Image (cartoon, rainbow, N blue to C red):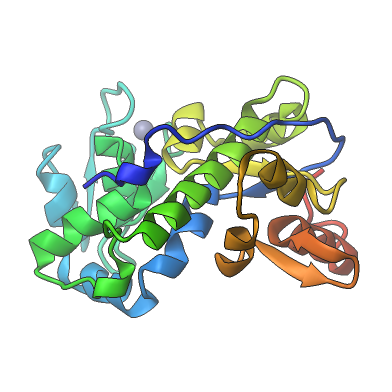
Length: 243
Ligand SMILES: [Zn+2]
């Protein structure tokens, strides 16, 4: 279930900054369109062990399961499934997550695609408004969200811009594959309106970003929501903000 609006979207320009804030842009960008309750309902109906068991043979480990990791080569199982928390984690390569992230990484799907696929299997209906319809406004919105996601992804992949953030991810054991599967990006803390400025260069309607909640109206006019959150986090908890 791809979104037609994803085709032909233009990448936004990336400009230099010295500090960063990591963002799971894929998730942040997609979440508001599918209600939390629907995601919970899907998760309650899809058994993670059953899902992963379709791809790799599982061995019982008490109440839980382990397996040879489907994401890296190994001879002894370091891939664990916790059935209480409905999550998986590999102590070998560091991948981990829930049913949605497993499917995203295994089948190379976007978050909405993984949600739709599991919703279908679990016979959970996704409300009309949350669907990517052929309706022009929704298509525009998806195109904008996709562009935003790519913008932050490109910042993280940028040789200079993303260098510190990528080094940080390596120290946390986040593999490049995981980074790409979750579509991680980084939002620069320097420059409070970079997304706004980047959008103005390519988009006829930056107001769409505001309606999507990606930019907010501050005292200085429109500012990036993710950048604003990063600065707020740093102000409140300097030690916890990555830099
Ligand atoms: Zn692994």
